[in-house]
Image (tube, rainbow, N blue to C red; front, side):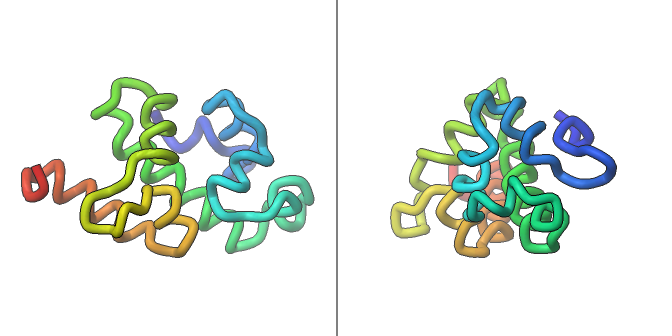
Length: 116
Protein backbone atom coordinates (compact mmCIF):
# COMPACT_ATOMS: atom_id res chain seq x y z
CA UNK A 1 0.00 0.00 0.00
CA UNK A 2 1.10 3.57 -0.55
CA UNK A 3 2.15 5.96 2.16
CA UNK A 4 -0.70 8.32 1.29
CA UNK A 5 -3.23 6.05 2.97
CA UNK A 6 -1.50 6.71 6.29
CA UNK A 7 -1.29 10.48 5.97
CA UNK A 8 -3.40 13.54 6.56
CA UNK A 9 -2.34 16.96 5.26
CA UNK A 10 1.18 15.74 4.49
CA UNK A 11 1.81 14.17 7.91
CA UNK A 12 1.60 10.59 9.10
CA UNK A 13 -1.70 10.36 10.96
CA UNK A 14 -1.77 7.91 13.89
CA UNK A 15 -5.55 7.59 13.53
CA UNK A 16 -5.25 6.48 9.88
CA UNK A 17 -2.45 4.05 10.72
CA UNK A 18 -4.58 2.61 13.52
CA UNK A 19 -7.54 2.19 11.17
CA UNK A 20 -5.40 0.39 8.61
CA UNK A 21 -4.07 -2.05 11.21
CA UNK A 22 -7.39 -2.45 13.08
CA UNK A 23 -5.99 -1.15 16.34
CA UNK A 24 -5.94 2.04 18.41
CA UNK A 25 -3.81 5.16 18.13
CA UNK A 26 -2.41 4.37 21.58
CA UNK A 27 -1.28 0.95 20.37
CA UNK A 28 0.32 2.55 17.31
CA UNK A 29 2.22 4.85 19.68
CA UNK A 30 3.48 1.90 21.76
CA UNK A 31 4.38 -0.04 18.64
CA UNK A 32 6.43 2.91 17.34
CA UNK A 33 8.05 3.52 20.72
CA UNK A 34 6.17 6.73 21.44
CA UNK A 35 4.16 7.96 24.40
CA UNK A 36 0.40 8.34 24.26
CA UNK A 37 0.72 12.14 24.10
CA UNK A 38 2.68 11.82 20.87
CA UNK A 39 -0.42 10.61 19.07
CA UNK A 40 -3.04 12.65 20.91
CA UNK A 41 -1.68 16.21 21.00
CA UNK A 42 -1.54 18.00 17.65
CA UNK A 43 1.80 19.68 18.32
CA UNK A 44 3.34 16.32 19.30
CA UNK A 45 1.96 14.57 16.21
CA UNK A 46 3.77 17.18 14.13
CA UNK A 47 7.10 16.72 15.93
CA UNK A 48 10.08 15.35 14.00
CA UNK A 49 10.49 12.42 16.40
CA UNK A 50 6.85 11.33 16.13
CA UNK A 51 6.78 11.66 12.36
CA UNK A 52 10.12 9.82 11.99
CA UNK A 53 9.03 6.88 14.16
CA UNK A 54 5.67 6.56 12.39
CA UNK A 55 7.40 6.73 9.00
CA UNK A 56 9.95 4.08 9.97
CA UNK A 57 7.24 1.74 11.23
CA UNK A 58 5.14 2.17 8.09
CA UNK A 59 8.19 1.76 5.80
CA UNK A 60 9.12 -1.57 7.36
CA UNK A 61 5.56 -2.88 7.25
CA UNK A 62 5.06 -1.74 3.65
CA UNK A 63 8.34 -3.38 2.63
CA UNK A 64 7.31 -6.81 3.95
CA UNK A 65 3.61 -6.65 3.05
CA UNK A 66 4.07 -8.35 -0.37
CA UNK A 67 5.75 -11.28 1.37
CA UNK A 68 2.82 -11.83 3.73
CA UNK A 69 -0.04 -10.91 1.41
CA UNK A 70 -1.72 -8.39 3.69
CA UNK A 71 -0.87 -5.38 5.79
CA UNK A 72 -2.37 -7.05 8.88
CA UNK A 73 -0.07 -10.06 8.53
CA UNK A 74 2.90 -7.74 7.91
CA UNK A 75 1.95 -5.79 11.06
CA UNK A 76 1.76 -9.03 13.05
CA UNK A 77 5.23 -10.04 11.77
CA UNK A 78 6.59 -6.59 12.65
CA UNK A 79 5.36 -6.91 16.23
CA UNK A 80 6.07 -10.54 17.01
CA UNK A 81 8.64 -12.34 14.84
CA UNK A 82 12.19 -12.42 16.27
CA UNK A 83 14.77 -11.62 13.60
CA UNK A 84 17.80 -13.89 13.28
CA UNK A 85 21.03 -12.08 14.02
CA UNK A 86 19.44 -9.48 16.29
CA UNK A 87 19.49 -11.33 19.62
CA UNK A 88 15.87 -12.38 19.27
CA UNK A 89 14.55 -8.86 18.88
CA UNK A 90 11.55 -8.15 16.67
CA UNK A 91 11.40 -5.50 13.97
CA UNK A 92 9.24 -3.46 16.36
CA UNK A 93 11.85 -3.61 19.12
CA UNK A 94 14.59 -2.59 16.71
CA UNK A 95 12.60 0.34 15.29
CA UNK A 96 11.73 1.48 18.82
CA UNK A 97 15.45 1.57 19.64
CA UNK A 98 16.29 3.63 16.55
CA UNK A 99 17.46 0.77 14.33
CA UNK A 100 14.91 0.94 11.50
CA UNK A 101 17.70 1.06 8.91
CA UNK A 102 19.03 -2.26 10.23
CA UNK A 103 15.59 -3.82 9.80
CA UNK A 104 15.25 -2.48 6.26
CA UNK A 105 18.75 -3.74 5.41
CA UNK A 106 17.86 -7.15 6.85
CA UNK A 107 14.68 -7.34 4.74
CA UNK A 108 16.66 -6.34 1.64
CA UNK A 109 19.25 -9.04 2.39
CA UNK A 110 16.55 -11.69 2.82
CA UNK A 111 14.92 -10.59 -0.44
CA UNK A 112 18.32 -10.90 -2.15
CA UNK A 113 18.75 -14.41 -0.76
CA UNK A 114 21.56 -13.57 1.64
CA UNK A 115 19.70 -14.78 4.76
CA UNK A 116 17.50 -17.39 3.09
